[in-house]
Length: 638
Ligand SMILES: CC/C=C\C/C=C\C/C=C\C/C=C\C/C=C\CCCC(=O)SCCNC(=O)CCNC(=O)[C@H](O)C(C)(C)COP(=O)(O)OP(=O)(O)OC[C@H]1O[C@@H](n2cnc3c(N)ncnc32)[C@H](O)[C@@H]1OP(=O)(O)O
Ligand SMILES: Cc1cc2nc3c(=O)[nH]c(=O)nc-3n(C[C@H](O)[C@H](O)[C@H](O)COP(=O)(O)OP(=O)(O)OC[C@H]3O[C@@H](n4cnc5c(N)ncnc54)[C@H](O)[C@@H]3O)c2cc1C
Image 1: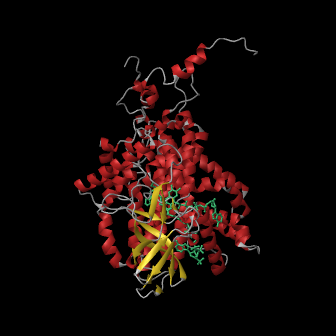
Image 2 (image 1 turned 135 degrees about the vertical axis):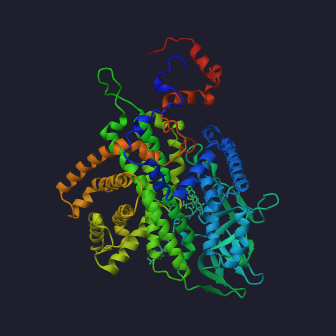
C-alpha cells in the first residue's frame, strides 16, 4: 500500500524485538501452562482446528440480533458435535473443542452440570439408563435449581415433588410464581430434560431439597410436555456475550414422573412410600455445585490470561510520549504505573492456573474418599471450592476490566475482545454461588476450625507464608474473640475468609515451585511471578499485615522496593510469558492482542466493516438530519 511503513506491513512480527528479549524457554513454559506435554498437544491441535474452520467464526457476534445470534449458536453447537463425531474426538478433545469455540451455550450445562449431576447423585441403574442417552446427545439436559424467588438459599426452594404411592410417581409442581425455575442455562429453548431440584414430600412429610430427572419437551417435535410452561428469561448484560445462552423460566403444573426419576444415590423413596436417608451427609445433594466451582477456578485462569495477553501485547505495541530528539515515543509497557497495574494480573493468571490444578486434585481426592464413605475431607473441599471460586472470579472480573483500561480508548472497542470477554465472564461472580454467600461458608468453616484447633489454623504451610497465615489467625481472633454473633461480624469474617483463600493460593504457588520444572529459566520466571503475586497482595493489604504485627513498616517499604525490582525482571519476559498461553488469534478475538502486533492497520480495516459504514450517508439522514440542517435560520434569542 502507498506510504505503508515497515511498522505497518502485514506478515511482519512487530513484536519480534520483544520476543527476542525472553530469558527462558517459552516452549517449556507452554507445557507448564498446559499442565503436561499431552495436555499441550491436545490444546494446541484443537485450538488450531477450531481457528482454521470458518464454521467457527465469531467476529460477527456483536452485529447479530438476539434471534440471529441464538440461531448461529445452535448452528455452531451442531457443527461442533458433527466435528466431534466425524473426527472421532475423545472426551478430552471434545471438551477442548467446546472450550475453543468460546461461546456460552446449552452444551455447557448439558456436559458441565446435567451429566455430572447424574454421575454424582444417580444410582448405578439410573446412570446406566440416562448417561448413554446424554453422552450421545439423544437428550439435552439442564440443571434447574434456581427459582425466581430463591437462588442462594437452596433450602428455600419452593418447587415440590410429592410422592403418589398409588401410581408410584412424583408430582412435580410450582406452587407459587416465585417457585418458577429461573436462570437455568439451556432451559429456555433447547433442553429436553432437566435435573429439577424440589422439596421432597412423602406421606405429608417434607424431607428437604432433592434432584429429579424431568422431561420438559417432546423428543418428536420439541413442544413442551403437558404441564410444562417454558421460555427464555430475556436479554442479559451486554450485546453478544451471554445472550448466546437461553437461560430459561419453567413452571410445573402437577407434572408426573416415575419414582425412579428421583436421583437416589444419597437418599431413596421406596414404592411403599418409605423415605430412606443413606448414612451420607445430606450436602452430597450439592455435589454438582462443588464440581462446577472447581472447574470455574480453572476457567478463571483462562479468562484472566486472555485479558492479560491482550493488554500485555498491546502495551508493548502502544507508544505514547517520551520521544527523545525525534526518536520513537515510549512503549507504555515501560511506564512503572502500567507495570504496577499489569504485572500483578499476569502473576495472578499463573497463580490461578496452579491453584486450579491443585483444586482439581483435591476434588478428585474427595470424590475417591466419598466412594469409600470417607467424609473426613468434605468440609475442607467445600470451603476450598467455595472460597477459591469466589476469590478467583472476583479477581478475574476486576482484572479483565483493568486490562480494558490498560488499553486506553481502543480497549473499549468490541474489536479489542475485552468488552465481550468481560460481559461473558462477570456472571461467574454470581452463578454457582454468589461470591459473598460462598465466602460466608468459608468464614463458617474457619470459625469451626479455630474453635476446634485453638488459635493455629494450620501449621502445614511453607515458611514463606508465615505472614499470610498470621494475618488470617489475627483476623479470626479479632472477630472470634469478641462475643458478638456470626451475622453481626459477617462482613469482617468475609475479609478473613478472603485472607484465608489468598494464603492457600500463595502456599500452593510456592509448593508448585518445589516440583521439578524443566526448561531453561522457566522456574526462575515462575519464582518472580510467585513473588509478585505474594508481595502485591501484601502491599495491597498491608494494613492487615501491619496490624497483625507480623511485618513492620520497614518490611512493608522493603516489600514495595522488591516489587519494583521484580517488575523490572518481568519486563523483558512479558511478551514471552503471555505467548506461553499459546492462544490463537481466533480464540483471543482481539486486534489489540494479535500475535504479530500489527494493530493499527487491522483496527483501521475493521472499522470499515461495521454495518454503519455500508453507506456513506447514514439511514435517517434525509428524514431527520437534512431538515435540521436546512431549517430557516431564525433570529434566535441566543
Ligand atoms: C460460559 C461458560 C463458563 C464457564 C465454564 C466453566 C466450566 C464449565 C463446566 C460447567 C459449568 C458450565 C457453565 C458454567 C456457567 C453457569 C453455570 C451456573 C449454574 C448455577 O448457577 S447452578 C445453581 C448454583 N447455586 C448455588 O450455588 C446456590 C448456593 N447456595 C448453596 O450452595 C447453599 O444454599 C449454601 C451452602 C449457601 C447453604 O446451604 P444449606 O442452607 O443447606 O447449608 P448450611 O449453610 O446450613 O450448611 C449446613 C452444613 O453443610 C455444609 N455444606 C454446605 N454446602 C455444602 C457443600 N456443597 N458440600 C459440603 N458441605 C456443604 C456447611 O458447611 C454446613 O456444615 P457445618 O459443619 O454444619 O457447618
Ligand atoms: C449467567 C447465569 C447463569 C446461571 N445459570 C444457572 C443454571 O444453569 N442453573 C441454576 O440453577 N441457576 C443458574 N443461575 C442462578 C445462579 O446460580 C444464582 O443467581 C446465584 O446462585 C445467586 O443466587 P441469587 O440470584 O438468589 O442471589 P441472591 O442470594 O438473591 O443475592 C443478592 C444479594 O444478596 C446477598 N445475600 C444473599 N444471601 C445472603 C446472606 N445469607 N448473607 C449475606 N448476604 C446475602 C448476596 O451476597 C447478593 O449481594 C445462573 C445465574 C446467572 C447470572
